[in-house]
Length: 64
Image (cartoon, rainbow, N blue to C red; front, top):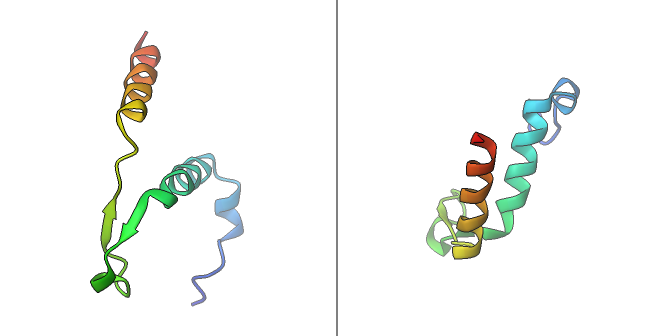
């Protein structure tokens, strides 16, 4: 099975589009540990307090 190609059915899925957008948005923040580079293990770097404030504001706005 070739895992490098995305199933065309997924490309039209709104849920897949949201997941893909979220993944691409945080991709630059993921830092792989040198020891685990081959396994893909690592950690997500913090984007800082500003991002947390934006997330909280968006959540509060969504609940109103």
